[in-house]
Image (cartoon, rainbow, N blue to C red):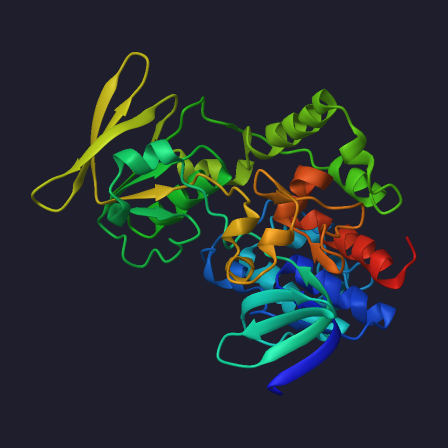
Length: 388
């Protein structure tokens, strides 16, 4: 790689949103460079054996050519043959997509991003810079792992792992673990850990346990696709209308668990503790951890070897290191950690676009899911080509 590389468009992040953007930029004839480990977060922060909740319609190609269904057609497979999609198959699709769309990410990381009069300068880890007139940041989830402060106060940091940090279960055999959280990830991690030989897995959450039921995502695709022609529809909703959208998505994604998981969770070795909270903990002389769970009518003491936080993600743009190290954060309009974006995902700094999870305030909760990768690329492409 040249020590100094100029380009019209720099795409930072080679996950679903970045790859979709690169495919669209190539289709539009925009000179671009995409940097980052291809699907790096998915490969290193998700466990083998995991299944996706999305179906085969949530593909990555804004041109609707290199779809998951087209990938399956080449293998003479139907969606029914592969759903639920395994992590391994989705990563295989992503590799196929990159090859077909001729996307070649530079596997380097941006250390800092600075803005100037003529554009942006990305300083790369290990040396070198990229000068770009415009930049798309697709940070995904990597920097936004969330552990509630009240739990930080009562659990020793050395004993706690977030789900994105704890994906290798090769050493859990014979151990006892507590998982805090009540979403799909909490239950799937419990199943995978038990299947890896964990002696006991406890799952604590502050609400009723979700039911095992098929989620209805059929309404999501049309809403997201409609943003291509009406990008400002979500921001124009009243706050009660926005909350209803969030509630509906929450009810499908958070109040239900995939039915295929039930047989793996309901059985010996996994204990569910609904309507409980972690009150305190202390380390025992033998090396284990005593955790106190309390509820309205009970007080339970669990002895475990470690705690997994299945407590989700909370976007805050100031936690993205390349922005924190550069000169851009001080110039961005930000509200509660999220950047102000126009209808085409452009920030208050002209030429800088931010998509994926940090776009949820302006475009709705859908931008925390890969279903939005295609429309994200389409909208940014319109701004880049002046066809808004």
